Length: 229
Figure 1: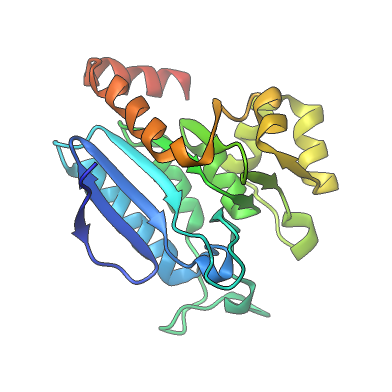
Figure 2 (figure 1 turned 180 degrees about the vertical axis):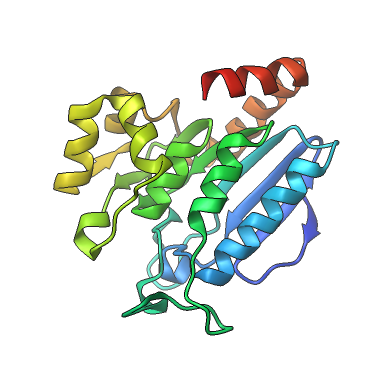
C-alpha cells in the first residue's frame, strides 16, 4: 500500500490510497488521547473523506507504538491534562471538546468506517470504535475498557446506546459500571468486534476488507448503513 498524505495535521495523520482514507490518532506518547485540537482535526479529515467522491471506506486507527514504553493504542479518550474544572479547554481558551460531533459524522456519513484497533481502546476511544461500522482488533495488543465512571465522565450519546444494541443491556452496563479490561477475543465473543487479527496483519486485513466493500454498490452500501442505523 502506498499511502499518500492528504493533508498535514498536528494530532492526527490523514492519508489516502486506492479508494480508502486512513485517519490515525498521532499522539502515541499519551495513548493517543484526544484534546480539542484533535477532535477538530478529526472532524475536518472525516468531512473531507465524506466529500471526496474517490473515497468509499475510511479506516480509523492509532499510530504507535509509544516510544516511551512500546505500548500500542487506538485511542484512550479525552486527554485529562487538557481538562480543567470547567471541562476541556482548547488553545483558543474556549471550553469544548466536540467529540459527539465526530461520533455523529462517523455514524451518519454515507461511507463505511472501519475501526482498526492496534492496542488500547479506552473511554472516549472505546466509544469511537463502538460507533464505527466495523471493528478489527489486534490479537496480541488490543484491549477494551470503558473508564467514563472512573474520571467523572459519561457517554450520553452513541457510545453507550449503540453499545447496548451490540452486546445487550446487561453486558453494556457491566462494561460501563465495572470498567473492566477486555481482550480482543472477549470483545469478539460479546459481538462488539468483527474479527481478531494477528497484529502484523491488522492494517493489511483492514485494507482488504475495505477493497471488498468498494467492490459493492456505493448506493446500496449508503442505504444499508442508513437502514441499519
